[in-house]
View 1 (cartoon, rainbow, N blue to C red):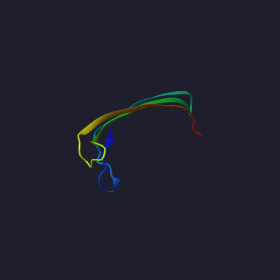
View 2 (cartoon, helix red, strand yellow):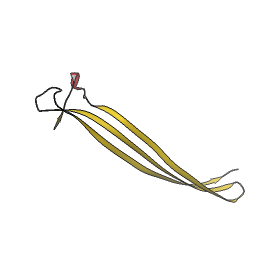
View 3 (cartoon, rainbow, N blue to C red):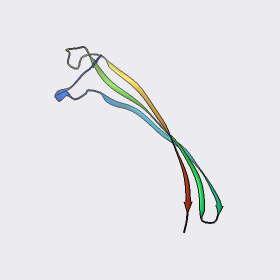
View 4 (cartoon, helix red, strand yellow):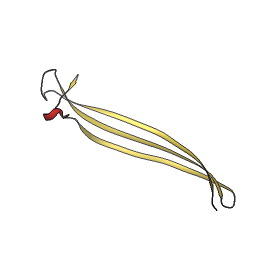
Length: 85
């Protein structure tokens, strides 16, 4: 499979619809005055359609379009120990 190139070898692909969302929470404990122990957790996800024009070898920008749905997600965690003076 060959992806078509436009003038100056620029790709004829484009980004389509995209969805981004984040979900997180925080838990904090204050065992004594001015001292905090906390835990943070966050999940982030991106879903995106990537549109490309597919060309036959030797052809220029001829062929069918294809859409690829890509999904990526990641977890982030953090533990905090904080003292206020």
